[in-house]
View: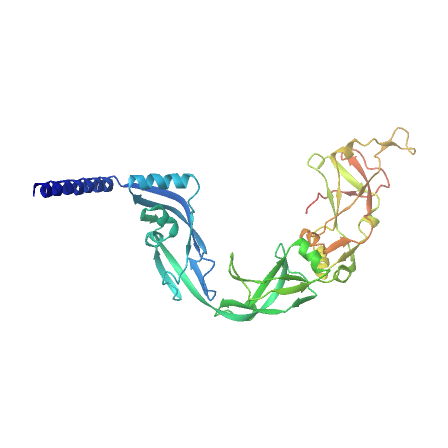
Length: 365
């Protein structure tokens, strides 16, 4: 009997001691704030659903506050500092039973409590910032969409063929007409390849700026051969701009010796769009005057003893082709560059009798 009583006292003491440690551990709970997190829509969601957070496919979480025992918080802090904590969480509406079309509120702290990354820490989420997000769900339908081809700058490319010209893709149910399109973007290297052989790529449907969905199948794109793509044109009524630096403007004037050659015509090879764009630029050719040109030694005039005539300088014109077409190799000069002949004269000096009229306009591109 005495042994039993003694055993009971020992068991009671152990239980009491254990409870003391448990309550002590609970009393030592600490909080841990984690910043710079991200919540994204899972990429593996049902393809018939378009899910966003207030119109965005991902949103930043300023911070979350976690709570747990001092030991668990210390372990979590060590894990985070070592870079072994994944800061991005993924949302699947079907798993959260929020796949019904429309808008619904998402309690972020509640959602994060079930996230794998949080459960691994062994801590509880007590708050999040923001704490409520609006989840938007749009039901998509599979429809036929027309494929368009663009370059890496999102400019339309002239194509020889796209096979097939239409593909199936998931788009919002209300979308129709010209909005039913998918895009294929080709890099500069792919553009060159497509002129030799078909390039295979999967078209992309844009649901909203920055939010896309791949089409159900790929297409093969062929671009026109180089000789078929560019045609020969002659641009007339050429407009000239003379470019002088701030150091020369107001101090020197430019006397163009061969204006007929400079402003006669320009032979180019271009696409029709590039040709029209070049015709519409403000200046077709530019004559660049360097600061060092003012230091050219003048010639002694044989006609008037002691008089000096500015030396005649020569410089190739710069052809002001539109940059976007130049980058795509859709415009090129189809002649040798014209060489301008000119003299640079101080404005204070008298113009030599019979010299061509000065050109004084500054460059404006």
